[in-house]
Length: 413
Image 1 (cartoon, rainbow, N blue to C red):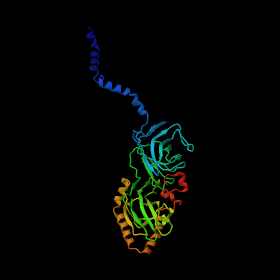
Image 2 (cartoon, rainbow, N blue to C red; image 1 turned 120 degrees about the vertical axis):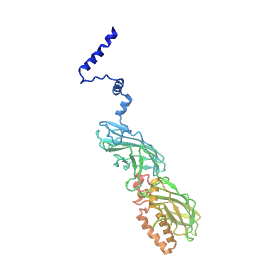
Image 3 (spheres, one colour; image 1 turned 180 degrees about the vertical axis):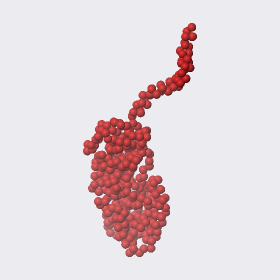
Image 4 (cartoon, rainbow, N blue to C red; image 1 turned 180 degrees about the horizontal axis):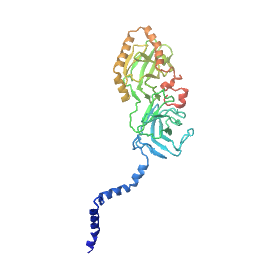
C-alpha cells in the first residue's frame, strides 16, 4: 500500500503537464546540482589570493582600488658592475595606502597615489669610499617606456669594501606595473656616462671589460736619445673598468693600458709625462692620447708603472697602438663586450678596420715634420672626442675621472 501511495505525486505531475502543454517541467540533474555547489563553495586559499595583488596578473590590468601592495614575485636578483661596486635589486613592489616605512621626508605622500619601491644592495669592490649621499639619478624605466625619477637620493656613503642596502621611492601612474621594468644606473649627470640598465625580472649579461691579451708583454723602445723603454704589463677594454672603477662616457668605450716605463739614459733621471711621451691609439683619422695624465721622475736604471686610459668610439672594432718616437706600431682587435656591441659592429662592416690600416700606412710615409704636426693635431682630435685634459679637469666626469664633485659622490671615477 505504501508503494502505491509513493507514486501518487508523480501521477499528479504528469496529469498537470498533460493539462497545460505550454509549461515544461524539468527535474534538476546531478550535474547541475554539482555545478551549483561548486560556484557557492570557494577554496579559502584561492579566494585570498584573488584579493591579494601579485605580479602574475596581466601587466595591462589595472591595480586594485583602495589600499594594496603588489610584490614582484618574478624578481631576478643579479649583480651588475658599476665602477668598482656591484649593484643588485633585492626587492621590488608597488603600493597605495598608508605612508610606507622610510618614505622620503622631502616628498609629499598621498594615500590615493601609487608608489614603486626598490630595495637595492650596494657592494664595494674597491679601496676608496663612494659618496652617494646626493646621487638622485637612478631612474625606474617601466615597460611602457615611462622614465621615472626617484623621490629620494641613494643617500649613503659606501665605504671601501663595505655593503649597504637602500630603498628608492618612485611615484608612478595608478595602473603602473613592474613587469618588464628596469632600474637604470647613471652617474651624477644622466648624460655624461654610459647608463647601466638592470632588468627587474629578466636575467641578463652585463657588459663590463675584456682583457687584450695580445698586448700584454709587448715591449718597445723610443729613439736612442730619450733612453725610454716600454713594456705593457696589463691591457683591458670595456665599458666598465672594474679595477680602476672607471665608467665609459656615453657612446664610448675605454682602453686601459698599464705601461711599465723604464729609463736608461745619460742623465741621472728624466721626467716622463704621459700626455707627451705615452703611446697613442690610432682610430680612423684620430690619434688618441690617454686621458689619465701622470708626470713622474724616473731615475736612470729604474722604471715606473703608468696607467693610461683612452676613450674610443663604441663601434670601433680595430685600433693601432703607435709610438711617435719609434717605429713601433701594432694592430689590436677590440672584442665585443655584449651581443648588442657585436650587432652594431656587424652592421658597420669592415670599413673601420680598413680605414684604420690605411691611416697607419699613410703615417709610415710621413716625414718627421708631418709626425710633429700630427702630434699637435692629436690634442685637438682628443678634445673633439671628449678626451680629458687632466685628472683635475672640469670634464673629468666624462671618463669617470676623479674631480672634486665625483670624489664626493661617484664610483665611476
